[in-house]
Length: 349
Image (cartoon, rainbow, N blue to C red; front, side):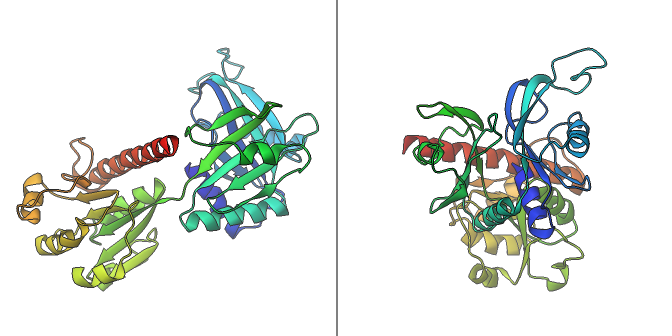
């Protein structure tokens, strides 16, 4: 899912008209990356995102540069099952058939991608429907949020009717056959990045901030020491909140989807922060330190169900870098669980 966010950032900051977007839409067998993996290839060969461990990108870039692939929407198929040294699949870690949709990036698509970025930044979820191009290379696509839909649609072929009446509830990306005509339509769901709010801007927060940012979280940082809240120390942080716990409580607007970590190394500050955070319906509330310390912080009160302590997956981590790996691994695990729960809720509603 992270590929789309990188591509949207590139679209919003660079002139990408004339580029090509490649998306894995179907995988039969095993592959390094699955349906939904995306890559933007610019006219000068610059690539954003990835489709494989490197076995497809060079060939695809060569087809785009030398054979005009991507001037119109089309499907490419890579059969990675061959074991011969000179054929696909050798040493790639893949053993499947991968179908890739390539789309030219024109002015209309740039407009729609920028709109998607704006909606995701506002916390909206986008459902994606793309009719796979047939022999005439014409392709309908539709993007839906909870309030609107937009895209490129031929009103005469029934695509709009099929997609507006379809339900994306399974959580599965890939190609489906919809409607009476059994149109082959690729469906996906773009989710906004999860927010991670870290209390504590000490040096040990640096690898945590960096790894969380690389793992697809929006990272905000809070501390009462203004000198510590600096872009040079934490270039990946989106927003800094400066103040003591009672001041931060007034500044913050917390959501049920937020991930929060206490990393101040100050018992009194953590106690003051936990006093109001434990009553918030956060997705995740993690506290660095031992279970015994957390019990003291709670002052005999029962720990809320969303509280994680000791924080991080058990990997016998030592030092800031390893601890950051264990924490972010747990964050990713809980984020995946959150998405699965959202799918279950939609399916039963």
